[in-house]
Image (cartoon, rainbow, N blue to C red):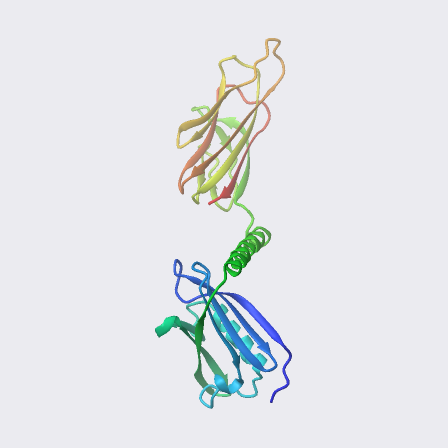
Length: 280
């Protein structure tokens, strides 16, 4: 009998693309005996098989040369975690009479010049689940979601954003943003338009530095030529000082939408526009 250290692995798997059900699994090794537990994450139904010796699932047809029981546990874990389209690792779950489930795992084995598919079959019996177990399972699911969100925030790509500058306007009073190479935006520098390449939720912020002018002068944020925000430019009766006007707006934009800023007053020095994609 192999002398094995106790081992437990767990994770989440699925047997068909979303929106098919996903399952939580736990594979545990104690004293060279293996157990497998599966749980439907939606219904919370569970299936279990315990006290399996190596000979219960390994035969001459599927034996991996020199593999220990712990090696098989890790192999089963890799198979359950693999992509559904992976040809080297496959998994299936069948419904049997009496509510049981048959878990079938297949792994491609390569030894020297030989290659074959090793298949392993486990018949899991239904388990009566207490209410407290269901609550604990739901809490576990919530913890998984929190960890996934945390991981997405830490490891996900930086938000698409662009920082633009303008010192002049065109005949339509639109600020002419200087051309810039940017991921997610197109700015040609000639028409004052910023074209969005990806649909999503965007925040747009503009700072317009202008010379004193009429109290009727406005600054406007335009999306596809229509004003989504309009403010009066600061007006001074004493004159002589430049004025700063701010625009800020958050909205959903579609691929190909065009953003522009229009100002009635004459520009003074440099004005700025920042656009950030903050969500899908």
